Amino acid sequence: MFIAGETQYENKVEDRGYWRSELRHGKFQRLIPLPVPVKNEEVKAEFKNGILTLILPKVDEVKYKAVKINLAEDKKLPTSASGQTIDVPVQKA
Image (tube, rainbow, N blue to C red):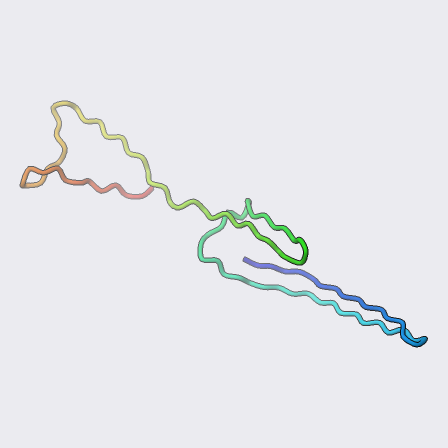
């Protein structure tokens, strides 16, 4: 995540017939690594009372692919040598 901004500060003081003016300005940027992928199109930001609040929705985890298995009455599930039903692994889509 990359954040960039600009700050400006101005202070004018009149003291015993003299004016004193102080100006500060500058740009800043920060690069913050995130631990998970983010949905860039859904990021929201709010700056209120000097606090920057970011809402960064995570990308959904990889979903499993649904697989239909048609079992005819005369077909059996795969079994091991002991006659127990074995699990058939399904890979991620």
